[in-house]
Length: 275
Ligand code: IPD
Image 1 (cartoon, rainbow, N blue to C red):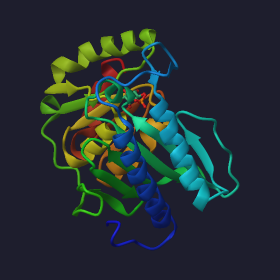
Image 2: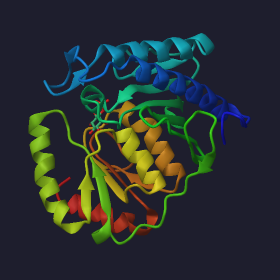
Image 3: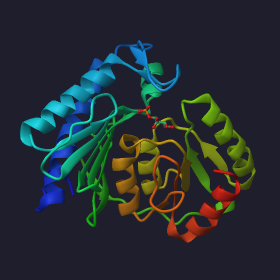
């Protein structure tokens, strides 16, 4: 699927809007970023949880672009007030997932836009701002990646067969809150000796898209917000990845994800390690 071959149907139409706006927003982030370190405008859950003026301006751009086409939809964004809609559709948006990377100039941050219908994510798009790669998925319609520039070649995503759990490369992330981070670090000291290695890239949305394309084998994180998770988790799931939480679907308490061939063993290990 690509911008050149628009599919029909409601989730697909929502996807087309998500993709168009995400690409526009990613270009805005790219051209707005000054050289060097970006100034932090404010902090949120802890002094390490940063927001920049560009995060805010990007969310404003996304809100306006979606509202212009779908004024009755709801909106849940990382940087602004929730908007309750009347259409049954709402948009779950992280204008810059990987803000700390953005601040430091580390090229792993993305725009993440998902559409939910009656609470279920049906379409998701993540654009890696630095590389221009676009990851997309529609519920039941598969996942794909479009090479930069926008409109470039599109390839379907099927998560590759992983090695054993013992040889799995595990992507993860840590909370901004010190007390939660300490518990996560303790669990990680249990997990790390039992897998190939860990990667803390700094963008959950890109981690989940990376899982979909085989840049890691498994994932675990606690404390993700809906905007970190919504689009990337659909891309991963549609690429064949199994996602699970503490007692059902993944949520803020726990997100575990892995290929079906290793997921049962990996999820049991993650829980045994104290996550
Ligand atoms: C963060 C990133 C990070 C994850 C944090 C998220 P933000 O999102 O996704 O990888 O570990 O939990 O909060 O704050 O950069 O939008």
